[in-house]
Image (cartoon, rainbow, N blue to C red):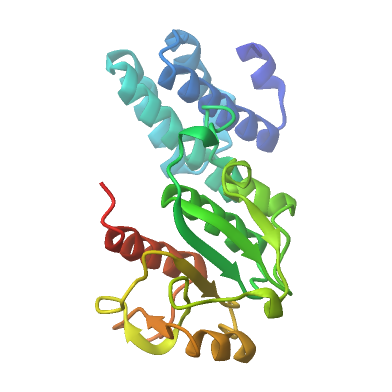
Amino acid sequence: MITLKKLSSLKDRTRIRKVAHLCREYSRAAARGEAIDLDYIRGMVSLPELLASLSIPTGERLQTASGRISSLGQQDVVVLLDDLYYLLLDEIGAPVADWDFVDEGGALDGSVRRQYPVRVYLDRLRSPFNVGSVFRTADSFGVERIFVGEGTSTPEHPRAIRTARGCLDTVPWEPMAPGDLSFSDSDPIFALELGGTPIETFPFPARGTVIIGSEELGVSPEMLSLADRSLGRVTIPLAGTKGSLNVSVAFGILMQHWFTALDVD
């Protein structure tokens, strides 16, 4: 543990960043039920050199926090320190990425995950963030397998791995060329795309594959043609000016509806 004297000697920006990360470490420790040194934390966030380097609103919030820490319960301390972490990073303009939100549970146990005959084809998803997010949602809703189509960012991209939060290890996936995706009456395919059947009335199948398209262009003409020869298109009605959702958000909405249609207990 760095001493308060050492903290005082750091350069302003370095000190702010160090205190921010110490707040995060103590917040996580408290969340795990570990004992934390409240006297040290109180001294850290009220350090004169730290307060002098902050804007007045941020400095006032730290002083208020310092006065409250000793009277708070364990879970309230967790939340307070987490708030200070983001407050201090914002003070120095340090962005927080998706992978900064860390799970403490270690490797996921895929053997406990229920799976259903539901598959997903990724058609030219360019963003590794979106690919990773799709995997995380797929894990939650029991997706059996993900097919990674032509032009899609590899799930092995570092940003996809970070965003997936371990779900690349629980949801099987494989590359698949567009021409290799097949369907039948009992195992249809459909596309998530504009101009289709509203999601509330779409006849979600008991088994099948949904095609998710590019962030900019949507599902490619080739894959739309394939879907239209099977179960067609499903559309999420919208009321806003944008007319579309982020692909990972849209996928989450679709999977919740499909999961419900499966009549899962």
